[in-house]
Length: 205
Image 1: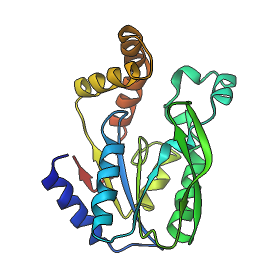
Image 2: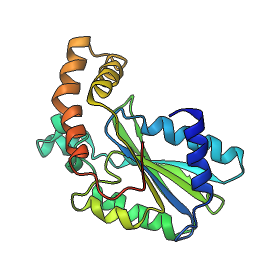
Image 3: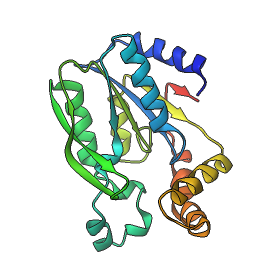
């Protein structure tokens, strides 16, 4: 996102009246759509204004690889059913109402979730939440819609997603051939599923 649009979005977020203890801002989109970069840049901009923003990634709610393997889901890691959806929904409800919430994060290098890694406290007045399924219309993810004070969806062409995904997997020690096979076989399937079931969103980029 260019600087002008980032500043416009930050302006809009600072004008949001939170419906709970803090504002919950959703940044949703397909794998490699730029969610984490936008969330990081937004938090940096908001905090430069003294807004008290914090980045909350959904990826900490990945199911563990051992559990995915036992369920025959490891090759589909990243699909909706490979996350603890109800745990995430419950955590977002707590984030809206409770003074302090401790959340997990995801270690991409080790390919696993790390519990108790993110502390959200009373000084955190804006939670910028980023993840694939934040605006997903399928149950149970559609329960999230009522929690967001502002929701954004990144609509990125598939060709750009593929280029970024291949580069991501090459950077994680895949050969170019392995990287493209993984991107086409799993990530793009998830991207199409997300694009086919986008729920109510406030902003599309």
